[in-house]
Length: 375
Image (tube, rainbow, N blue to C red; front, side):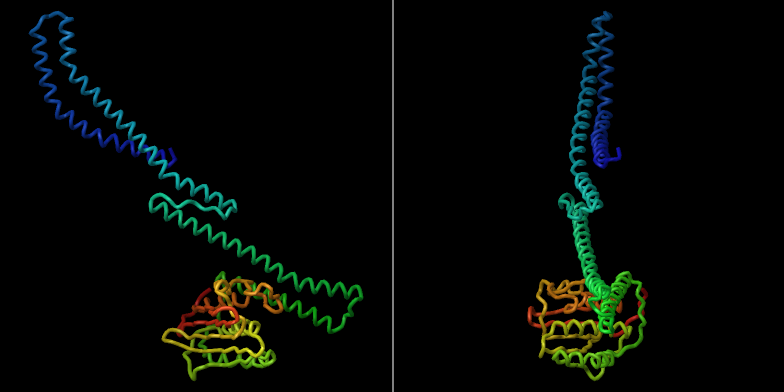
């Protein structure tokens, strides 16, 4: 009785019976007077005839024949209606319940980690909407599971490399292959700094995505921020033979932001630009604004980004060139952290490129007026 198709079948049967029973009762009521009149006339005829019981019984049965045929006909009609109602109810209810049964089976498969499970989109509009929503959810879960597995593999790889270097060097020192001097200690210290940086980046990113990251929002002038950061990076760009150009307006509206975190975002964009820009290339920092927001863009003349890579540049550990190692390509967390920080400020960040070897441009858009956000 708890199955949907059984309940729908019973509903069809009850509706069908009442739908045809009510007109039948009305019909019988209308015919009642006519039948009673015929009964009265027949009784008079029987009484006027012979008192023979056999003869009287035959006449009574003949006279009551219309009443018996009417009852029998009505019973056959109701029986036929019931059979048809049962048949229609079972077929239609089974058809209505089948998509929900398929959905339940697919949900059980998803619960058993079979994330490739999908259901066929068919049935009524409401059932189709549920099927489409379920398939979208399953696709999102499958994609998230793939990203999680890739992230765990990337984290293991990023941690394994410095740990291997540290362990190898320490083993060599213990075996008297290397002398324990300041040069060797500096190499080991550099590896521990990389480990610490990676762990801190992962911690910050986890807090940002969980919205548990606090921001110290103050009124900021992005011209001052850009000038301070560019002064630090100028020698680095000069060392790499890359020209650093500033395209700044005379004045710009202030924003509410965390100076340290906005600086971190700009640092990440500049680090990304210098890694992908060859010698004699150029990197430009541009500030613009409109009625609602201030835009900070970092444009380079480097390797560029193809269209298939653009949607993923802000994913954790994602590298456009998979052959780049940790030293030449970074840990793959800088852009992901910048993306999370900009979103925490109520802004947007996007990447654009015309293709390979055409350079790329990353733009941060921050609202001119922003209320303090709670995380």
